[in-house]
Picture 1 (spheres, rainbow, N blue to C red):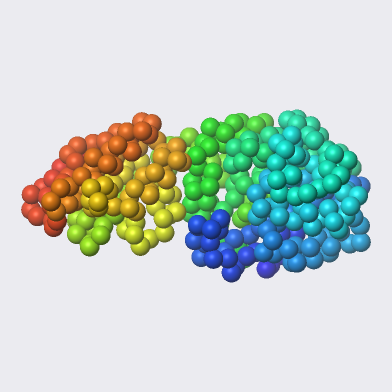
Picture 2: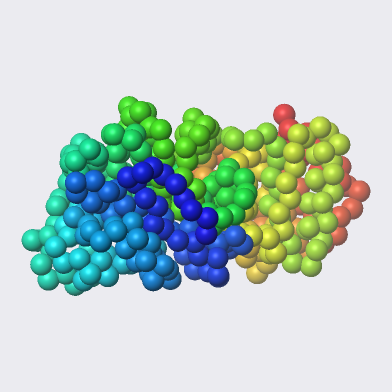
Length: 388
């Protein structure tokens, strides 16, 4: 991995993981993921989080090089999820005089992960607005509950104007991967943090009072330039606003007939001037990307075959996942298919009716087995309504 430079006194000690199969045992990460950790070298030394067990050896080596014979005074625990906190026990064993810095919820949850006999003696409990003085560097603590666990906090270092943002502003992808930040940060945000838009908004309001020059997240690249772009993306995402003009078609097809109808609908939408039309075959394409696109675009078509008198399984999984992630503020069209008793539209609408500010446009298009001329007429009508 190429050297990651933050400053003379703040060192990157994280590691890339390029052979991980699934992040959080569910998300495809074709370009891997980074586990970020940092150390601030001053009169007192603070380690900013540990990393996942998969890269323990590399992380310990990076830390020892950065310490250059010294020992850390503090371990700041921003987030207790194991991909960031697994090596807390490792570090306590290696540096028994080190203090743990966290908030009341950090120390409520910590015994669930580690048996630390002298926890009361080595813990420093901080709250909103508290400061940790390292010498020239001073850390200010801001609580960020449910972004995306209850104990999450972020730290602002006032001298170098650095925000240690925990999982905020993170993305999939190893640090030596050259790729667009927006795409993989969006997929990361909506699948992992997306439910907690209100809490992200609260954190953004706190961040707006700070003079931030650098953002150091726990996943993904260190952000130093054009910070307004990243902050504006988070503002849009956490407000559940439309990010891109276009139509997203989410298709759950068993034998290909529903997919054929969706391909025709995509063609119709493009002929009618839709700026962008994205079609996803939910059975075969990355599920997390379907979630991302459902939030990205303001106009969505949900199309599903009928299966066991319900919607087809991939569609049910998508809609329930979107509901769980607080899906809202979208214009929706419905296409169903069935041979003897089409019923998927009714089932899709039942789930959509539980979401906030979802406008379902008519007509609902019902296809019986294969696409016919009358169905194409109805697809044209649906396209007109969704594009209004």
